Length: 149
Ligand code: FAD
Image 1: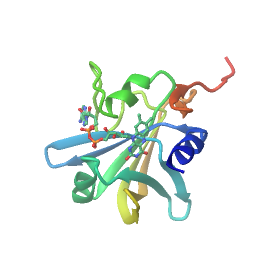
Image 2 (image 1 turned 30 degrees about the horizontal axis):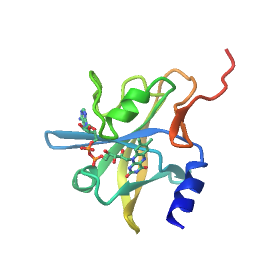
Image 3 (image 1 turned 45 degrees about the vertical axis):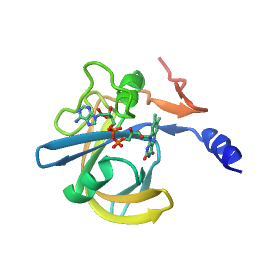
């Protein structure tokens, strides 16, 4: 069952985000694909964050977070914030530089979700960068969208 579950879920294509939190002097980021648009009125998004993630206690403390939506070519950023450090990757002003968009959120609610926590954020500010193709994740690898040139 567990293997079939993982295999089935690997067949669900998603975009890639980096969730970032600032608590006092500390700023942390974490790669997450378990992200969704939840509500328009009010504007809410939801994420599933592992109970083991170092980000989670900081997020609870900060009560706010930013979600950066990665663009094609930002594989190294995704890998970095998934615990496989790459040179020269970091956060600028709480977001990933060059991302397609960033959502500045206030923590709205936390719900149990098995070994993850469902994090609901109320979007307070939207930052849009130049439009372009997203970074995709499917079948355990990074993929590209066919994009008109
Ligand atoms: P760490 O593993 O310590 O931090 C992550 C990395 O970010 C470390 O290398 C750290 O050095 C670096 N870092 C953190 N803050 C900064 C900073 N301010 N400046 C520079 N570097 C910094 N997990 C989930 O819970 N939910 C998901 O939806 C999810 N989706 C994923 C999708 C993909 C494609 C991948 C590859 C991983 C996904 N993960 C997900 C796993 C998750 O990204 C990793 O387990 C992550 O390492 C957990 O982060 P952490 O908070 O425990 O801290």
